[in-house]
Image 1 (tube, rainbow, N blue to C red):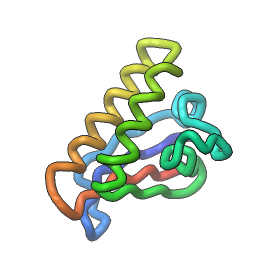
Image 2 (image 1 turned 180 degrees about the horizontal axis):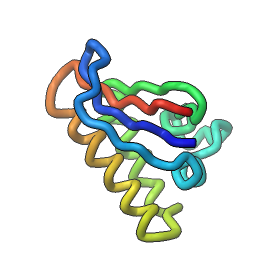
Image 3 (image 1 turned 45 degrees about the horizontal axis):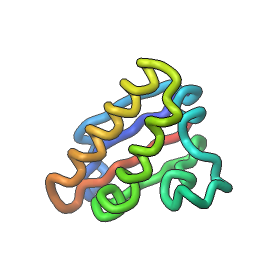
Image 4 (image 1 turned 45 degrees about the vertical axis):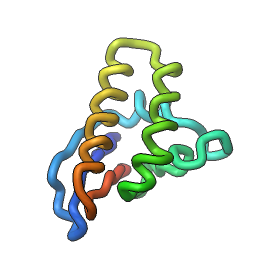
Length: 103
């Protein structure tokens, strides 16, 4: 299974996309019961999860940085950096969204 992580415009057009194997990402993401992650715990590995620019800036990115402590390898850190970079690009303009497309 794979996650597509997209930067999309308001019409749902994909501007940029990353694809990752679900395994490493699922291992890094918090369990949905972990209330210390107000945003990331709701990323659905089987469905779609979309974040707007305010969510990305004020909730997603601070929580995402916490995942670096969970990284076990260089590949984990590379994955985290790639998603963080894509998320930061969603802050460049209004009507840009970060979307996780589950398998």
